Amino acid sequence: MSGSVQVIVLAGGSSRRFGSDKLVASLPDGRSVLDHCLLGMPSAWDLVVVGPSRPVPSEVAGRVRFVRESPAGGGPLAAIAAGLEVVTSQVVCVVPGDAPRAGEVLPLLVSTLEAEASAAAAVLSDGEGQANPVLAAYRVHELLGAVPRAAAGVAARTLLSLPHREVRAPFEVPDIDTPEDLGRL
Image 1 (cartoon, helix red, strand yellow):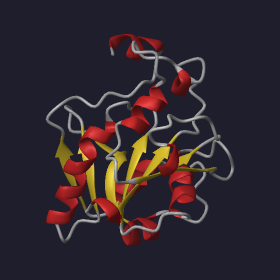
Image 2 (cartoon, rainbow, N blue to C red):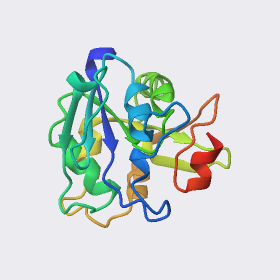
Image 3 (cartoon, rainbow, N blue to C red):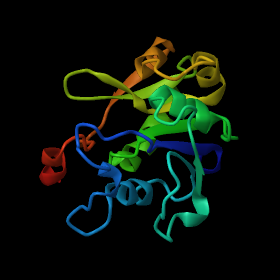
């Protein structure tokens, strides 16, 4: 499993609700939100970060490749499309760069996908039953077929039309949208 999975990290958003670049915001240990996200990824998986190039922790630098969506700021689906252009694995995970604990749930999503031959995706579901298409594991072939050529501005929720299995994490996987979210971590 480990060598056959890559991760697309969505890191090109505008952080409107946060008020500044939330990915560089510091957590209590002094590391940034994005650094926590990258450091939490399974260690054998390569990381495709979609967003502006920036310094990353030395522990993951050899596994990170930066790409940009077109147009820049085109939204999560455009970012996924850009990441898919360089993905070579058969299974890819998609995670938001503002979810510091996202990597902890990826092995569960991948094992669920591998166990469900008829599913194209295993998608994290929150406590209210909301499936999150940008925190998921996908079969690359099916994902390529679901992402439109002109993906900018198209809602990522369209990916939920793929046959998928919703998965509840045994712990909370928060994302950072506001300064208050950051303060809760």
